[in-house]
Amino acid sequence: MLNKPIEEIVIENGKVVGVKSEGEVARCKQLICDPSYVSDRVTKVGQVIRVICILSHPIKNTNDANSCQIIIPQNQVNRKSDIYVCMISSAHNVAAQGKYIAIASTTVETPEPEKEIKPALDLLEPIEQK
Image 1 (tube, rainbow, N blue to C red):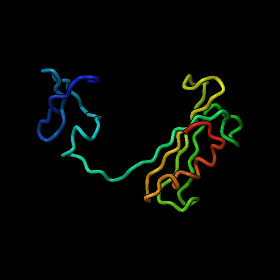
Image 2 (image 1 turned 90 degrees about the horizontal axis):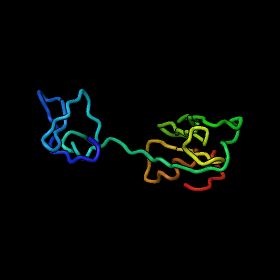
Image 3 (image 1 turned 30 degrees about the horizontal axis):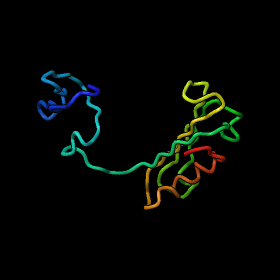
Image 4 (image 1 turned 90 degrees about the vertical axis):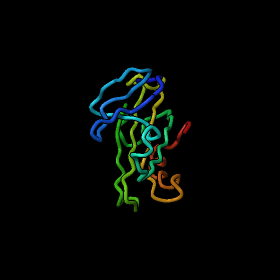
């Protein structure tokens, strides 16, 4: 149902069973959508900070890996939530030759989320663009 106007989310017996667009109903077992489509059925319970970085090098101390995932444990950085870092490269056809894409993310816990993600960004230095 991409790029089609949504007329209605079809609900039967309190359960979503489809989406109606342009008079046609696409039936489903599960609906994944932006919360704005079902604002009366969702409650915001948290927020995530995500930083996408372009690097000209693999992450240090990863044995020059083409891809890796790093989890910074919550207790190591005095937080309630872990910090996640994922790096991929041109080997995965997602970046130009010699470039790496790193994504750092965590659950926001304070009014200054940029400071919360800093331990992950420090691992990625130098960052070409973020």
